[in-house]
Amino acid sequence: MLSRRSGSSLHRRLCWLMLLLGGLLLFAVASAQQASQGQRQALVMTLHGSVGPATSDYFQRGLARAEDQDMALVVLRLDTPGGLDAAMRDMIQAMLTSSVPVAVYVAPDGARAASAGTYLLYASHVAAMAPSTHLGSATPVQIGGGGLLPGGSPESEPEKGSGESGQNGKSSEKTPPTDDSGSKRRGDTAMERKVLEDAVATIRSLAERHGRNADWAEQAVREAVNLTAREALDNNVIDVIARDVPDLLDKIDGRQVVMADGTRSLDTAGLSIVRFDPDWRTELLSVISDPNVAYFLMILGFYGLVFELLSPGALVPGVVGGICLLLALFAFQVLPINYAGLGLVVLGLALIVGEAMMPSFGVLGIGGIVAFVAGSVILMDDRNLAVSLPLIGGVALVASGFMLWVAMRFLRLRRRRPQTGQDEMIGARATALDDFRGDVEAEGHVWLHGERWRARSQGPVKAGESLTVVAIDGLTVEVVPDDAASPDPPPSVSGEST
Image (cartoon, rainbow, N blue to C red; front, side, top):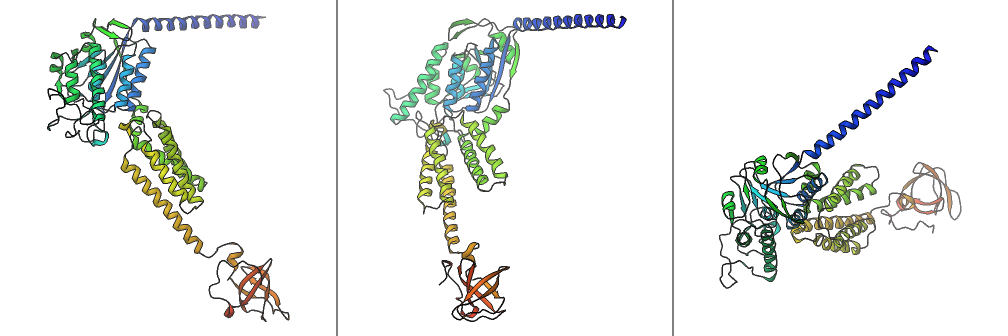
């Protein structure tokens, strides 16, 4: 009886203890939620380097996080020489439609917002710069450094290795005047004028939206001019100069900004800073999102899987090919892929492999090369992201060389003696095991390839005599003495007895 009462008392104590712990846990969660709601936050991101698909993906994920957590402000610390036009426009569109104000802050000291960075600065709700920084040089240039994209003069040269939309240095060459005053760069061709005017309209619309200097913005696009931080502030290009992020938050407190749903007053004083630095996904994507790298990874992945299927158990080609193919697909999800071009590339590679496995005297191989090159040229929808033509030509030459090697290999194989089967036995040496008996066709047994065979000969044969096989009839071989055999019996002997 005593033990039952003790067990019941212990059970009640445990129940009360569990209820108490549950209440404390609920109180802690409620307190944390109240504290997080009471403490407003600013998300700080960092963009250092060229603007591309990886940085665009990183920026949009940061905006989504800020919106989900109802943050008061997003600060983008910017230091870029420029970037790709498609990625820049995706970032601008995300910025303009964001429900959270975005402050683009060119920092640290010595940083720049050149080229695409100038557009991002003009698109931001708050444009800020640190001392000793600059912006400008927003003239579009052609990827690969081959000259200006539509919108620049053919005499001016982009910076070395730019490969980016909107990045070039100041040109020392004269620009051809095409307007009445002769002071504005218009472009020499219809395509140049088309893209240049589009760039000008884009940056002017951003300037007018936020009440900034639209005339200087147009000059930055047409003439690639630059401004220091102090000059930008004096010319109403930026809104504020700040030493660091806390100083920026203090200086923009109470400022009116234009959002998608109307004008809003910023309340940034005392915001807690939450950093959102680039993660492994962004770092990896920044490397493999280069069109040439993604294209080469796709080729390696395809051939790796093909070699693994042709040689099951090799493992290395399959593992390497699978990893490369998955990385290529990961990059393709953020690149403007033309699926018709991708289909032509895959078809071309398949036809080249088909030529190696089923020789068609070059029909499959030539068709594969044509499909592969055509698909590679149109693989990217954006001309700024086109795969390098030398890379396409190099891969096509390698594929052509491989196809030629396979064709020559098959021709040599056709000339070689058979190594297995009945055809291989024609011309083989045999030893008579006994004397052949018979009036017209002597018959006996021979030792051939380690086996005892029934044999037939047109003349007498003595035991131990060396013989040569000249034909096969079922399980009987026809033999002749070595001195009567042809020195090089043709490999196309049918094997039938005569």
